[in-house]
Image 1 (tube, one colour):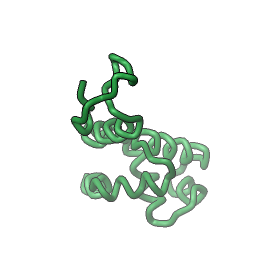
Image 2: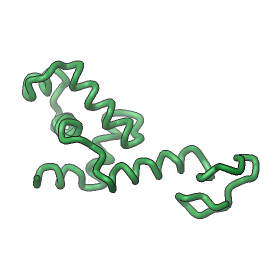
Image 3: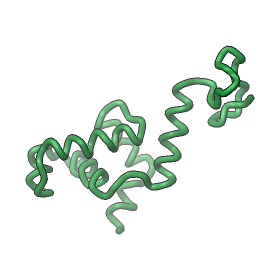
Image 4: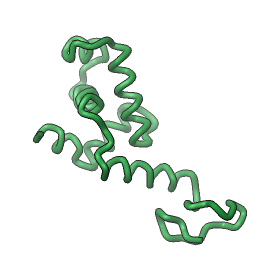
Length: 106
């Protein structure tokens, strides 16, 4: 079997149903699928965009008319979909893949 991310052979010890040579490659492949398919919602992109502008969660909540808890939920959902370890990492991924340009152009 070959890794679906890097096309390297998968070690037999990973089992017959393994699709990736490492957990990191599985996460990277999932992130790429989410980016390509546009799985981030407008609310998630809005929150990340405002985070990138330096707004705090309470400021974002006030701007969007939602609770700070909902802001955190949107940010955490986006972070999970992108496979990012922090909100700052999620923002960086959005910049790297041009997601903010797509979002702002809409």
